[in-house]
Image 1: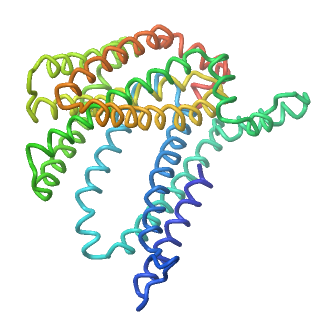
Image 2 (image 1 turned 90 degrees about the vertical axis):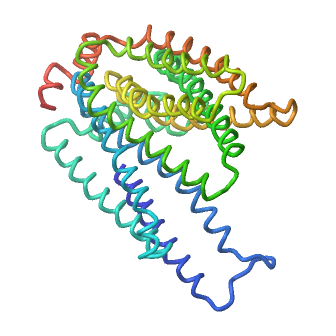
Image 3 (image 1 turned 135 degrees about the horizontal axis):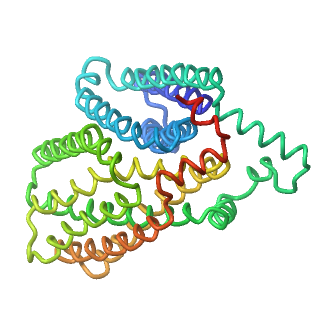
Length: 386
């Protein structure tokens, strides 16, 4: 986590300097007669998509390693809420920052903020080291144990395996992660189809680009507000009285209700489609994100570490990209419109509900999670974290 944050901050800083230099040239640098600056910016966008997922996943992995199951049910929701609030604040301030600092200055500011994150990460690791629950120490102990035993499949061997081999071994050993992987594929499918339906309807109702951008900006701000409300005011209280498996089952059923209403409407309005999409994204950002992370807490280090890698790369990427390709193929081949997309959303929601119920049967209760955590970390593991 520390190295990843530092490398990403350094890359952003160097890229900002390079873009600033290229923009200041009297004659652009070309390659084959084409200005290289747009390609550099495109590469930075791809880099951003990758490092955001990587660093975010590693931060959550650290938190799931140092909190007990009981603590995670209390703190994960408000922590997610803070990320929603900061995303909304940062989004609203982007235009002002770009106006005052310019594009390269904004990139430089992002590098500075990421460097600050690295300092805070170092502080978090120091605290965990001081009180005896540093997850890095657990990793080092496993490597040392593997070397002492001269295991044929030690920690170093695991790193050399392909991602698909890691996934197969992990899912065979930890069935709940296999169920989580399938649930993520299904949920990302629903989210992607709803996104396509929303963009399609919005474009037909509001043809003006500027007006459409303003409407969409307000819409996503509302999503962050609703997510934040759920994360701060609702979920911490709800998780005190129900089991995680119950919330797992409720979440897709809510979306299925909205999707069913949308599919049985002959010509669903923009507000109906946007409301369904808002419900999906708000629950995804709040309840699903919290429940997703809680699955990892009672697992051993290898399951948490490899599970994050496999599910983060394969689950979310394949769920979004696979569904996007399928919808594009269906649209180009059969001319899918809003009505067909509505029915597809309903069908995908049914699949997601089925996958989630299977996962909920494997998710441990709070008491079972505490027992599993105690066996892995020792009886004093939870006390040290308090």
